Length: 336
Image (tube, rainbow, N blue to C red; front, top):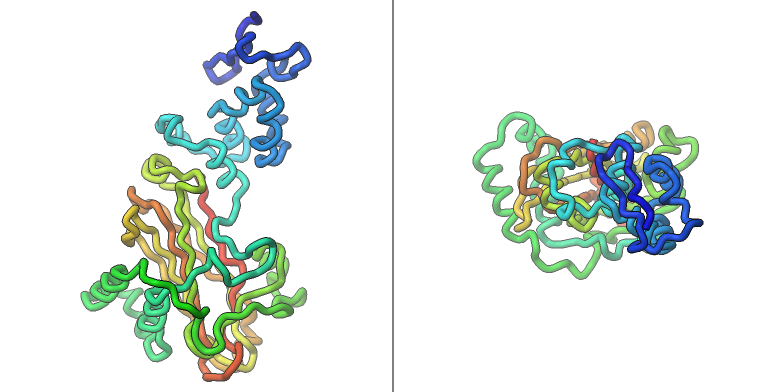
């Protein structure tokens, strides 16, 4: 049996004996730990799990070692010492690495590579009611002033009533008016921030567009499915960043709304961010595509879900799709 190989800098030994059935040709036992781990960082993380892990028992043991994924997180500067305080069995290290080091968008904008209004986007009466009640065109300015001053008792009662039907039945159609639609050609190379929009939009120049009545949609992201276990969320409280691009037509006014809620295991709201932007007629062409963004941090323990809702409509009551346009909805969770 070969002597165990000391893992430099980790105060741990890797078992490299016959129990792992390594062969003399296997490179893992013959190289320093950091060298092998560093080489693996050049392999796409999905292939590390689906291909490299199946090469041999030695490679499997090496890749299954939580410290391998900790090394990877340190390498991409997305590691926090707070993770050390969490028992390893409470962390799905490969999944956590995939959803932090690679910086993936946890909001799914497309299905099978094509833009779609099918699930995971859903629409519910509660989502429609939130926007239509709180962001009705006559209430936009008032609502913004309320949000920036102090939360009144009537507003608190309104928010509380919204949560009571968070899981009610989905509507049979996608929004009001002529419903949601998908457009091409509205994100053009001559537009400011074109490359950034396309990149954040899944390398697509397509966009969603609303109609003359409220079109609202939402996604609910369960954080544990992406490696952010209860222990990670409560101990680390990772940074949660949300953003989305929106614009209005040059000849038609519109309103764009966004609401993002951090939810408990019972899907009760812990923290929320919401905003609305009304664009007057003939201003859309001058303003172009704009980006709304927000960061959640120091939000406390108990966050288990994120509910992302957006929507809009036009202000001229024109049949067709003259309402607000959206692209590149993003939800990024970072351990930094």
